[in-house]
Image (cartoon, rainbow, N blue to C red):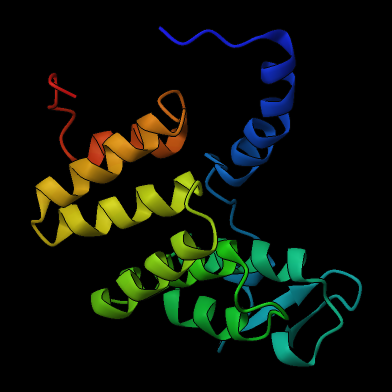
Length: 177
């Protein structure tokens, strides 16, 4: 068993905190964005109106929240439209969510490219590994999906939503893992 000194543990805590914040396990609640807006528009609380994401002054964090909401609420094409308005297209969370939206839109090949790009940018991005593993499971590539589960575990993510959701997608059957 590997033992970490207090100093080594302290240096790892910021990495664990960042990984946990990227592993949001709470599905976004429906808001005006998914209840009132159409055609890829999102709710601007200040303007109290639906606005085009590319013509708004909303922050990337606000846009990202809208992307998550749209993708989770079965509007992947609208999520992709909002993603296009974000300023940093190479940010791992953007690449990962693009993969998620593409997968939900039935574009698996493009989704896999986005997941791989997210992992190239940040190999420790556990949520990208989980979503990619779920896509692989959907494609029937169970060994490759299990490999992602093992990677999540090896990178310290056994107690994360990313691990649990991929494990569930695989049917929870891997006592050898």
